[in-house]
Structures are given as C-alpha cells and as structure tokens.
Length: 135
Image 1 (cartoon, rainbow, N blue to C red):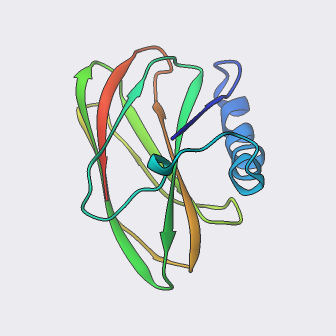
Image 2: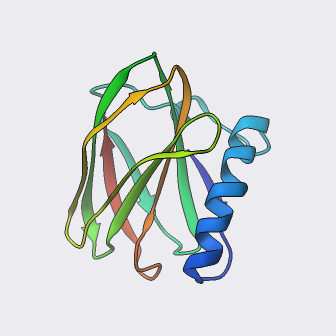
Image 3: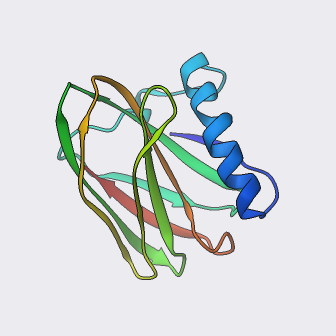
C-alpha cells in the first residue's frame, strides 16, 4: 500500500489529482512499494485512513474479462470510506461509496488485462478509521 497526499480538501482538486497524478505514480514506480501492495483474491487486506489528505493505493493484476466483487468494511472509526478502481491507463472503471460501515462494488468488470489500482479514502475527508478491503 502506498499513501499519497492529495492536497487541499477541495473535491475538484482531489478528482483532478486522482485522474492525473495517481496513475502516473503507480505506473512509474515513483513511490516506494512493498509486496503487500498487491491485492489477492479472497485475501482480506487491512488498512487505515489516518489522515484525510491521504489516499491509500493498492494494485491488482487482472486477466482479460475478470469481474470483481469489491467490499470495504470499516472496522473502527466513523469515516465514510470510498473505493475507486482504475485501469492501467488511469481510467476509473468502478466506484463504491457509503455513509455506513460497508462500501461495496457488486460487480466491477469486465476488466482489461493488466494492473489495476484501487484507491481508498474518506468521502468526508475528515475522519480516521480502520478498514478491511476484500476482493
């Protein structure tokens, strides 16, 4: 997982940065990554939102025509977690948000073959929490 500071709380700026900057960071390897960055099917991945100015990034390698069910469960705190899925070109292919503890994308796909990026943040940009991301 990589944490990336997105800047001001302005939603327009956050969306612009997510579209323009985050895929470049992942594709060019500009941020230090660890083996835990890669999500695996049926393997819950714990994480935390500790700063509202950060987005947590994860990667997943998909095969052509894969479909994913994405669930993000808030396990502590009061944030409203969101999860976005972007393909290797940086195009958003799925989004899930919630005002409760569970964020779900019932069916994400069919996906193109390649590395996809999962972005997790707090919709309100103001509350820390812990979560489990599951695909």
